[in-house]
Image 1 (cartoon, one colour):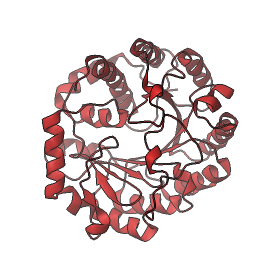
Image 2: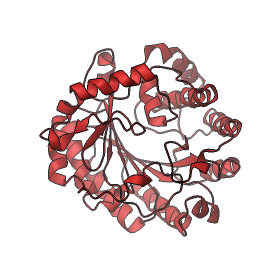
Image 3: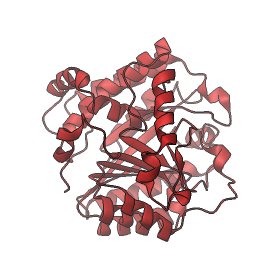
Length: 361
């Protein structure tokens, strides 16, 4: 697999983004009231074509972490070809593919095609699970979604038996509607065959139904404390890629920082959004992160050269605003880079690392 160690010596200098998130589509087959991307569902602009995406990928350097988002990403029939463009041109160490699991007939063959084309990358597929049975359907306002998600899960589990670079996990959005069900959800996921990780992500952004953000922060703390206890137990859920134990240690630090960020209502550590991270939406807009609407530019206006956008005066202005306003959020993906690329956090990460079991399940 592509080595992640080559990124460590260069963390102190300005460089190309190491973490890149691509919203491949705003289309979705679910109607989750907590979705922060709901206003983009009916965009009248054409999605970037495969040819356009190929050009964008050629403008980027090597990536440590490539994430796809949307919308439901598997609704794009050319998703395997899109992933392949970045795989060939940017050699990502980790490729993350989230899904609501509603279309196993699309998800399973397209995942297998991605796996067959991406042998040197770790491919992580995260299936959404926000409750059990009808409660999951209710939280997501999408009847039948739990049954379909479980069908998708079983198909992915079988793919794991054939592809060593596939790793699968569950993501749960923590919101008002399921905050009292966390123990039940965690117990279920702990017994789910083939599950390597369970992420609890705080509801974020500006969802269609703002009441989903009226959470009890103490209940979030109890849920992530439960995950920590399980991770330090005899049978932890942990990825098996290189440095996976380090990533798990970072997760422990991250959850505490998210809690403190929300409790105190302020930033806990410097944010590298727009410096070593970049986000592109389905129509070519480039942003520092998924939450901010501060546009750095559009690749369609810049010859599909994302680095021209990333190094532009507009991008510098966005980064300056982030520093000046000291904006804060609970977005887990950005805590990853903000922790792992901040030397002042290494002591906390190492302490957690030493408390973890040496072997994953």
